[in-house]
Length: 292
Image 1 (tube, rainbow, N blue to C red):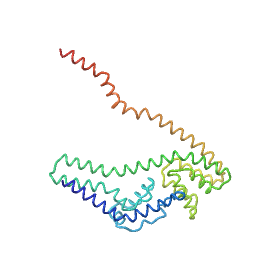
Image 2 (cartoon, rainbow, N blue to C red):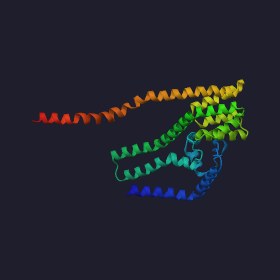
Image 3 (spheres, one colour):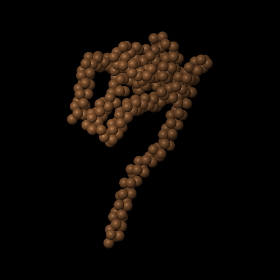
Image 4 (cartoon, one colour):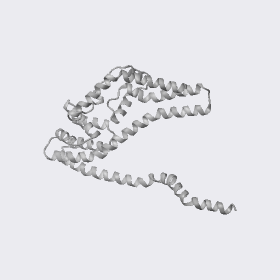
């Protein structure tokens, strides 16, 4: 009953906080609907915004190590979550461990027990690691999606540049035909260039926001080619061929890993069921014969 009362209290607190933030949420939804009338707006770059001053920010700065908030925000940005406020960061990182700690104290208050202590410790460890695991999975999934999309993007960009269009206009014309994180990131890159950021620096910001191997190769090739005076169309054409080879090699690598990944379910799930079906009747027959 105590644990249930604590859970209801936490749920009530969350609902009250959400009710207090309803005007802000409604405004954000209205801004999101505006995007339906035109091209999807690029997210605001984290290095171009000031997070402001709030109780959650002051709490993070006071009780967390130096640079923790910046590192955590950078991880959120790599996961594609540009709209995360310090309050959400604080709730995401320390909310589950706090809830588990309160429930654990309620359980231990009923009587200290070794099994309860081990259960509370295990749940507390999982609650502290699960948010980081979820965030890491989102970062990895976003980077893999960009790795799959970048060959198509480079090929379309090469065709557009060879048609005589400038780099920024070619990128703009290419991302209109694409979807996903690469479109958002390159739209943000063009926005930074229009605001006066150097092209090489804006492309480096894209690499900072996405941990993609293929994207780093693209940016490095363009920066070095621009410094050496190599024609842009030639760079993109060579990159297009190279990216196609890389994607085929990645597919072959995943195909070679498939038998190894299938070993566990085959040995521990399929073989026991197969042996039970095949040898079960014979085992019953042998037991029946030797029992006489």
